[in-house]
Amino acid sequence: MGVLVFLMLGLIGAVILPWMLERLPIQLPQGDFWLAFGGAFITASVLLHLLPEFHFMVKVVPLIAGGFFLQFFVEMWTQGVEHGHAIEQVRISAPRLWSLWAALGIHSVMEGTALISAVTLRTDIATNMYLNVIIHKVPAAFILYFLFKESSFSKRLRFLLFGAFVVASPIGMLLGLALTDYVQVLWVIGAFVVGSFLHIGTNMLAEVGHHHQQGPVGIVAVILGIIVAWFT
Image 1: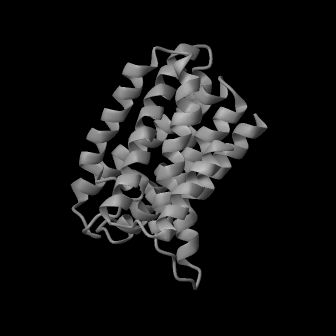
Image 2: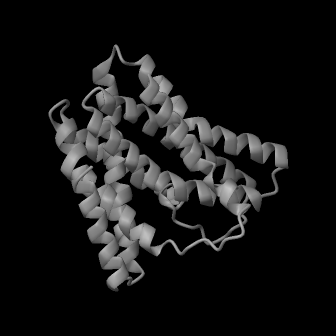
Image 3: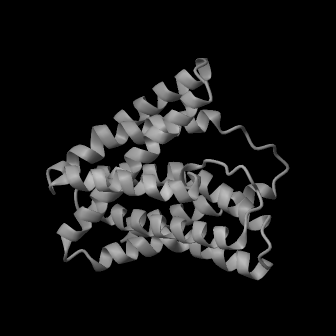
């Protein structure tokens, strides 16, 4: 239970990071290195660790494919905010922002449940799943935070909505704990999330290639992401 509390606190800390950093007199770095590293890490960790583990627990291929294409359809609506892709317009309509918040919230709840799913397999797999969540949760929180800041929503409503996003993954973890007697259901949810991770990771790498960032920094970031994934 202590480990689960630590994971929850880590997730909450990751998504309140934008609020904390905005109050520091620093210039935030460009996200190109993070995009390349994160894409390589997520893709490699899915192929090296998560996919092999879930493969032995469930009939995984249709579920992985389902999660992959579900994420594809989600990103048609969210424009990739969940892995840190910036939206062209900083100020968007209220209905659009509401739907974006709902999509990211559901995505976060599923990720939290998938963490518990991974715990039922092996502790090291849970750690790998956790790192995958954190790596794309931080940039997603940055973008959502600043979209709320530029919105027409009241300060109180912005606080409540972002707070709900903060606790979405921990709520998913609590849901996963409630389903521990139904481990097959947990594995199915976990497999779907692994599929979504595969889409997120490959999409991040595709963005790096699309922006023609094949310089030394991008290459180093990708290699570093693969190495870190291999040893975690």
